[in-house]
Structure formats: structure tokens, C-alpha cells
Length: 151
Image (cartoon, rainbow, N blue to C red; front, side, top):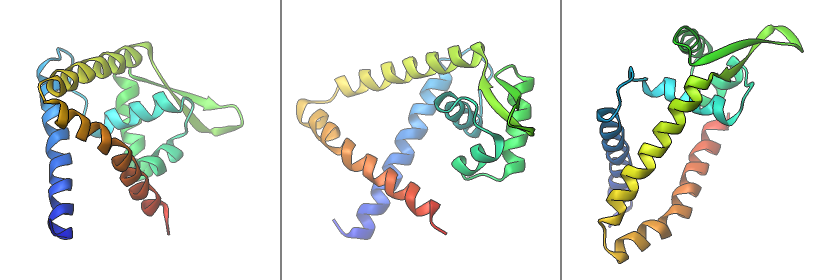
């Protein structure tokens, strides 16, 4: 397979797979749907409790005012708590609410079950190929992250 064709097919496949997973998970939920950026912010705060708004913006590659808008919405919706940073009273630290923690936990469990069901439908060779591809996909993600961090 040509390099350009392979890169395009890989990108299209990853995007399509993510889109299908999101759509299937949306169909099984009864709560108001969160937008992609809102979920990304909640997952970041879960991974790094107390992260500041500007640091979250940098981490998500979004403008600070965009993240501030997301934070305001998620605080209003009871998903995030914004606390004053004791070291810098002008800065805010973000924490998940119990409702957001439960929502993310439910989302992760439903996502894992969905993917597990579909992987179980594959034959052994396909499952092994996917398992073998995970380290390379993680390195690809790391490379993309590092390149985005370079000036």
C-alpha cells in the first residue's frame, strides 16, 4: 500500500471507528448528551484533578476563552466544580462532581462492553492483529502530541 494511501486509510478508519462508537453510545443514554469537547475536558479533569483553565486549554489545544465557556456550562450543569486556587486567588482549579464521575464511569463501562462485544465477533487472527497494533497506535498518538507541542 502506498504511504499516502495508507496514511489516509488509517486516519479515515480511526475517525470512522470513533464516530461509530460515539453514535452507538449516544443511542444507549438517557441523559443530555455532552459535546465532544465537554467530554474531553471532563476526562482531562478526571485524570488531573485541580487542573487550571489555562493549563486545560493548552492540553486540549483550545483557546482559553473556549475552555472558559465549556467550564461555565459544565459548572451550570453540575458536572464541574470551580475552586479558587489557594496559591493564586485569581486562578481556578477544576474538579469533577460526583455526578460527572458517575457519568464518566458509566460511559467507560458502556464503551468497553460495546467494543468487547464487537471484538468478540472477530476471528482470532483479527483480534491478535488489533492487539499487536495497540503499541504502534499509542506511539502514533504520542508523536502527534509531541509534534503539536513543538513551536
